[in-house]
Length: 105
Image (cartoon, rainbow, N blue to C red; front, side):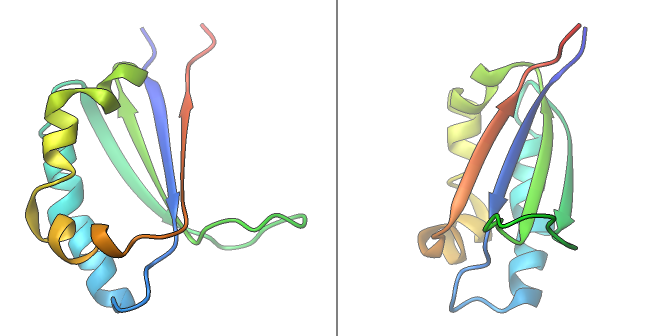
């Protein structure tokens, strides 16, 4: 069975250096989410270009999850509120977009 994809797009918040933002995402946030039951993988990307007039956030995280409900689970909600990411970055986040994609089998 194919997994659901969860795309999270965001801008680095003001007040956090790019180095710190990426370190905390990679070393704090992703490991916390990977510990959630139903999360099978995570990969991050940085915008390289846009063809069109869209205002697209710079960063994208792509998570492979069992279903859209994984994101609303208690374990997911706990994970996003733990660690340095939750303390230093999450309160400052502004522009953010979440998209859930279901497979066409």
